[in-house]
Image (cartoon, rainbow, N blue to C red; front, side, top):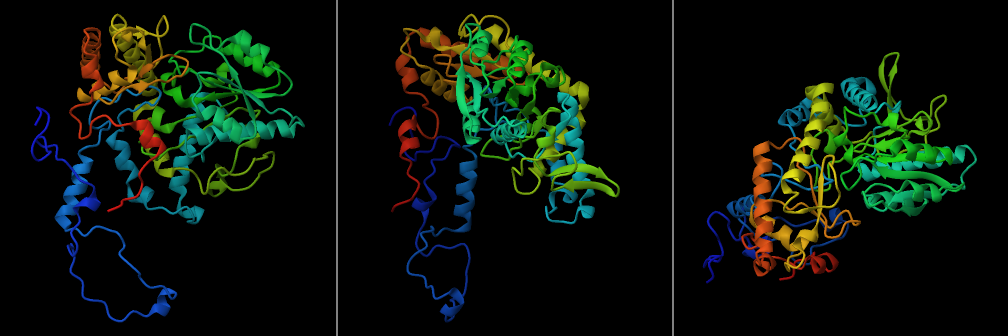
Length: 496
């Protein structure tokens, strides 16, 4: 046996766990039920059981231990530092979780009479007010279920606005090459064609290239600010003027709004619509496919086309508008019912506990932490761009040149040190990218410890330990897998 293996396969409290289908023993059961009597097949539509269900036979302790052990193999923000760039994996306050579980908020049904859910409607209205106040925008669509869904919502409003003016021929959307992949996908889903815009050497949009692509068929521009390279678009006012001058609308991807909330009102930048990732900016849960929420704020030019439903103040209290009102021309609905209400509760609780000054401080601290991280790693790693960053620090793989170690190797070695890797190979415009976002919720001590680990790995890589990196991770329940093969040909079904 090697120094990293044991006879049992276990290593201390890290128990080697089989698939649950490998653990079953025929006849084993956690319950004792009497034999069933004669079955009336007519009650089952003439169907009869023809074989085993394929479920494993297990006792209760086996089931409990299996899933408890699996839970111990998880890594999340409650476990340790999560430096994923452009994902904002920050602490979810337990106060917000407690509020979301209150019976009067958790036990509601979307089909209840509106007079019985006035408090819920007030939550939606209050959160909408905060989002409009923080962005300076006059309207917000609350129902989009995630960031990409919010992109789709904003683009549908843009499309409808053009069609209302008799300019349905505008079907081209400009998208920077460094954009999130959902941007061009959302544009395509709305029937637009995507025209990429290159970046300059400083990581920002090439304004001259953008202007050269403007024309009468341009519907709008999708741009992230701060952008995916972690940089503020310093020419954003000029960019907005250019797109508006060509008759288009300015869509801003709000994925990185957490870097400027409380400090910049996006309406002042000339933006027409922007989705807001509540899980990024306002500390609601993130990951695992949900829960998500992507409310989309709209300018005065796009507000009439906001989708239903939305909350208004009526004579008898709050009302949920489900159809077009006077002066409104909604493009339709984007989701069944009224949006992700549990996420709304969490976000509003977070906002209320922070206040306007607290939100401003949070975005300031996020930027400070990222620049601190960049400054302390800048001599050992290679920053992709000169100058300060916003909420995330971007490095490339030049520091690994001639070491035999790749970005992937470096990230896998970080797992052995007890950290979730940073974002790798994104944005695509940077070769071998390592994108790190410390967020505002990490202490200086936690960031310093992470920095020390990254610096030690860089030193080992430069000292010729390529074979060691290629073997990483060594201390996880599984070694390095062929992730490409697993993604392309996943085994989704158990075969005995």
